[in-house]
Length: 223
Ligand SMILES: [Fe+2]
Ligand SMILES: [Fe+2]
Image (cartoon, rainbow, N blue to C red; front, side, top):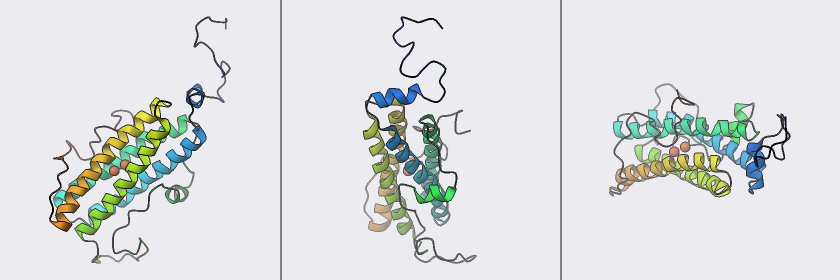
């Protein structure tokens, strides 16, 4: 190839080299610790994935509370969308999610969202058993704290990437938008259910379950 006078035609990464990524070099040059960022993204993706799992159980136990159930379902499906959105970014940055799902679950950056009354999930499950402590208020508390952990997580990713890594920042900010909404939903519901106090979230309903208005890459990652 002929030498070019175009300023971005070449850089540190030699032409044709597939062992290095300009997409990584460019953000490192702007001050991102890519190694650290990838580790945090894996922890964050693990939390989204495990939350998706636990919210499945929590939603089931909201039986008869159809309004709570529907909102829990939106939060559940949106966490799956968050996992789908951020996981490809881990690979773009040269990382990989763990080969063993147990490793992935253990390193999730947020606590397990266990069903109340199950002794942190260790209780043996019995068919048709009533889990007495799994009241709507107790379940809503678990959901609320899971959303709060997610807000802290994605805010940190925004801090680490702001002004340096626009792509990761954009994804984290889109996820954060939904996590903030999720917290507001569960404050709205828990405050009324547990304390009889109205603290509106401004929420009515998503268009479709798990709409993920900010985080879903329609037609790309979430068929
Ligand atoms: Fe999430
Ligand atoms: Fe969430």
